[in-house]
Image 1 (spheres, rainbow, N blue to C red):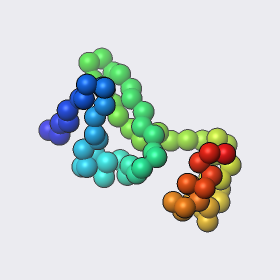
Image 2: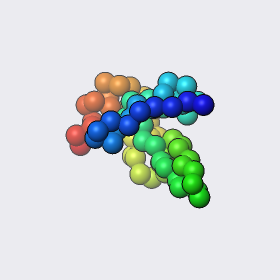
Image 3: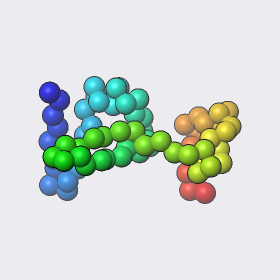
Image 4: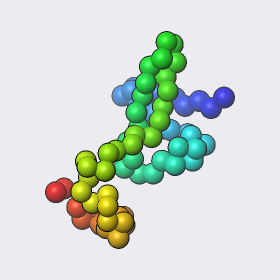
Length: 71
């Protein structure tokens, strides 16, 4: 079992094995689903229509993301 601690500000670090399994990277969003007494954590998937730049992989570098993050 993998665990992490909750801070006084209700924050936690997602453990590395979980980040690797979900292919999570900086800036990714995650979703939580409550099923009975369990939480299901998944990487958020966005529809292509939400992000106009998703169709242009050549604009997907870290430098491009920083340049366009405030638009």
